Length: 386
Image (cartoon, rainbow, N blue to C red):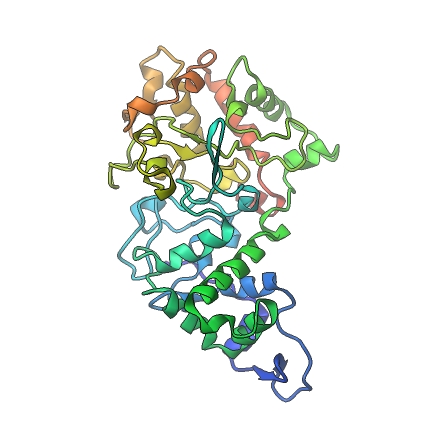
């Protein structure tokens, strides 16, 4: 079953013909010419985010794969048990897992510094920023399947409510040119994605930092383990520049690492990761590397890894533990009953980061899971499993 879209009251009114253009602004039919429509570019972007008319068959919106009731991830399980998203035609599917859009606003633009590549959207950073990312699924022929930029702009400008808003917020006639119009559509959606809706910083961990909540014994043990350089070193890749007490920490270094994630048996095995980013020009030294995701809302936005190969968060930690355990029994994937698969690109494997610390017993693994659950925004805490 497809995820139900959740358009705003304004969008519902516009679709029902209750809004018209008068004097260059949107007004309710039969009322005086007063601005009552989109209050900002972000409000315009919100309407677009939920609008299925931006897909070829009118069945899919941004919110279909990034459901606000599911951590802005895809809760559907109709393509490879939810590992990837089903396309707008109900048949095609992507080859990578749809990541959460929560806290995506904190991802820096794709760039290279002295340590390597950093930032960018999608798992391989091929979208430079949020605005670039927002438009690409509309053109993807396994996703929203629109023919070209002109088709997307035509769908938007067919609605007078939208056209008036773009004229007001961007430039008069901006939708007359497909390239400029398409860019403005991406900017509007990005403006919505930069709002507090996507980044409320309201988790139990945030409340603990503010002295408004207490971590229980399991959560505290998991916190200590997570930040420990002796036991796990998770924070090496899952901590930004602000440090342990940063109230705006998103638990990622925004960099690219090859952690040896096994191939998903139902997906194309030859996924080169960062090496597929055109800006990297096919550098084989980047094969198998993917951008470190945020860990905020991680407990409610599975399945996990770039290919959705793991259904359970505990399995992810068990997988990391294979680099430090000598026990063959601890190298078994509990979801399949078989050993974890080999790394598809062993030549770039980040062994220096992965082979670190002692093997973890079940109690410490459970403690890490407990801590990761504390990173769940308050609005999603009801989704947490016991």
